[in-house]
Length: 508
Image: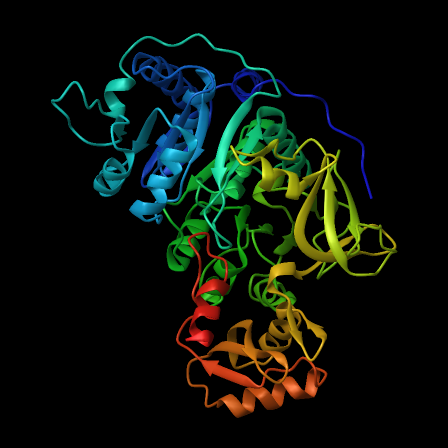
């Protein structure tokens, strides 16, 4: 399934200049009590670019950004692109050892952080200079971000569309994290496709709780460069459900982008007690979205539509999105412009409509490869096609359905069990608020299905009740034989279910 390609872009720095010229200076970003204009942010980025060059940053150099959400994350990215450098964003939740790997592997020449993460970043960076946002420094060898912004503006160092724009490190759930090399063209194509998917006249107020250091948040930021009318964004330092509801009500937010675990946390709030009537569209990505969560949020926020999309770091965060002419619940939409999807069988053959297999992708949004990892690149990119490692199928109208990750597959008595199938059934129970399923080695069946569940306040469910519910709705090969009731499902740093941690628990 494919759609026509979008126009070829230039560099993201050039795209930002075009956006400012097209939309003019306007109120653009709200953060913790203060509004910032687009012109102000652009001017700060131009000056910061000159400051970074004075530190020795050159075109093609990688610079690590390790911060919680704040305006300076976007300013730093814009400044680095203006200087021709490569943004290397990392989540502040990474350990010192994980950060040290990023610095060593990327060959970063500088880092930008905020005071609360400075000790960890400085320890991981070694001799690499670290610039601090929002801190005083009398040491000229350790300049602050504010000092970098005091000089002249840097003329744009233009880069071609195929030059590297960002280097993002994967979560490393199957080994050491790998750097995903994304070009200006790839990120720009994903941003433009996302903007087209969510475009509606007059829909200009958004609420941004996603970590900007994650590819999903980065893609949403690039999508803003393709706005057709001046827009306003409210940025959260980090997501908390009560804060999200309060800001959405206060600023009359119309759109937001979330991951499923955020939606689940929102449902714990007294949504009916707040005026969320302006909230029209929530896009969901980053992990499979249970249909029950989408329907429940729509029920409790009248007028809201939840639209699930699909992508991965290796595809600049976007592969498919719900088309404007109609969504299909349970589907992640259709391939975005320029992207083609096919479903491959075990030997690489193309499978027919409706049959599950590995999701394979072509298009301008794809990475150029894994940084300094030719073998891993060759395994994932084959003849220009990305093998995603996800299982899914296409329907007769070209809508894509994601079933699960291949590596999460449980094989019980020779039968395939996809955790999401079991989780969706468990979440349909009114007293179950969260569910995660993994496999446990078993000498008789090969693997046994183990479910972790969280319960609603006041629930009296016991593990055997959960098993009985699952048996009513699942075949004997699929229902869990073991259920563990827990206070919370462990999440990774990007708020996905941490199956690695759960597998460690069941194997202990």
